[in-house]
Image (cartoon, rainbow, N blue to C red; front, side, top):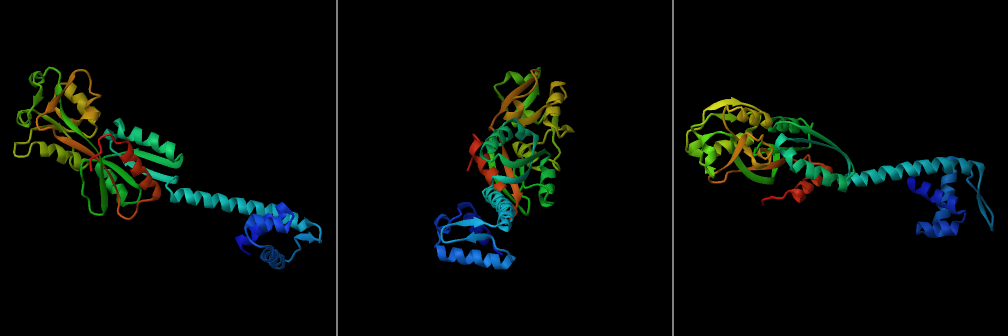
Length: 295
């Protein structure tokens, strides 16, 4: 028994006319009649009463039609769902992201993605860049949004967003009177830094600011950038943050531009050869909403 036969039977059962059913199915009447006869032989029951003037369902035909309709409906629903999955508009999508992406990129991208693909179940989990690389390799994530370039073997990477890095200083610091500060001036200040193992991309971006200079003395290393701002507000040192994160600094934290205008990037990463249609769709949305996309 084939799905095609079930569709042929359902068309005749609904039209109760072989000519109209054949026209609806875009086939001629003779092969339609032959398929219905074949179906009746296969199941061992007569499904239609046929006369030269009318066609009607037998009692077995009524029962078969009810079951057949349910089967066709389920098949159509499954097929439709598979088409949506193939277009990246259905299914599940697991995404990791660094906390700094939640200040602009993630809200914009998720809102737009919901508009375009409301049937995709998004699973969003904040985690460090290092954790994301591990989860991607383990197959627990399909996409990761990380700070800075990683160049991890086995992972593909695309730059999505770029923004300025600024110095966050205690509000009463002597350098706050200047329109901008130089990396050389910052080398003499205690730095609230980030752990390179958990945040390798961003740590590299900060280290690049002091290329050729002594690196500042690290007061402490901390993962949460919001907590880093709190320590700056307490006067314990300075930190370096992307502009979107620094914009939420407490009032007693002063933001200073850095000479040379160092920049930070947000990048999307995925396991090579393992990107689903939904993940590809989300990446296209990231590119769409990013206001500072660089080639």
